[in-house]
Length: 473
Image 1: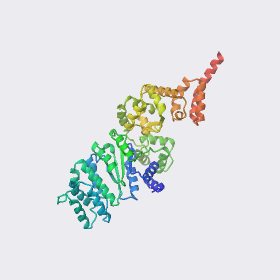
Image 2: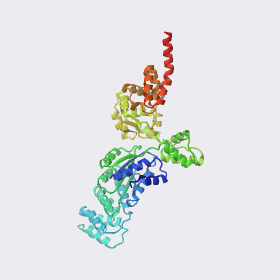
Image 3: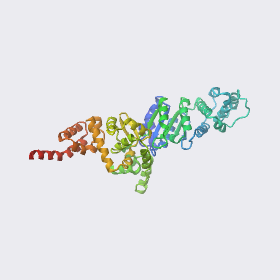
């Protein structure tokens, strides 16, 4: 599975646009030994479809179909374990020389009072086996020291056990199936909907699952109920595992998607309309929009749920985090800003950047990428900005200007898209013509010709006024 091209062609046939890079990243991590993955998602980005297709492709060469558990349906530990156990009973098994060894290993590590139930679980899991020796083998092992003659109901009795026993038994059941040569893949969606007991069970599963078993846990970091996700994320990374975020679909991918549906290339204006009407290009909404556009010739109305979600989260943030988000909302939503510039901006107002990042990151609103900070999703900028009136907008722009001038010219800061155009009038008004010209030259040297031209154009009237004033004197 080292060649990514057949993987990507499989994904592309199902038109999972914008997923090539993350697919390659996950398969490379698997090839390098990772078996635990965390997937960070937002509403409408098609995570369910991606997870199912990726897991099924992974399992094509490993074992049976992946076990996919829905956090929204299996919200408690008991419900999650029940669904997992039910899925294990549907995994096809065969009787061969490995069975005796796997059965002994399953039962031997359990206390005597759990062996009878373990035996019943083995019979339930391996019910497709027809050889008579199977029942004899299991019964001999499970009867050992149990003192019980009748078979228990494995499903009901498993759920009736204490939490620690349920966890121990399901972990051993996973190991039992894996020992029969059935590498498993478990996908848990909607982590944010699990209660504390289910989340705690998953943290236990990180440690107790079979080494060959792939475990994928997805969380919608946009939802308010994700307070436990940072702890789970840390647990995944320490195993070690890999935590990735489903990427946004860029304009190039959206253009290709548009062409596949509409059979023509889109204009720049149509791509902007598509982005605006699909909550920033989220795949589920893009699919709805393009289908309606193609059939009806008009854009459908997609409810803007972001404003409600963001308003609730923004209002609960500390002052430091709220100002950080306010500042970022003045720039394009996909822009990542150097932390030294943001640190200066917050410090000018007596606020702390690290405190802001801790609060906003935990809520899934902002994220740090190396030495830069950006919105958790580019679509957050527009509804966030809609909460800011003109007076506040001017105050925020002045903060940006003061921070920019305080740290001095730095290439990494100057390259921040949208920053110079936003501050150009303040720079020209507050700085001398010579200082503006010097900054414009530095921008041009960095290849930022458009930003340089903006400063030159705005400073031209000012330079003329200064020349006329000098000549009159």
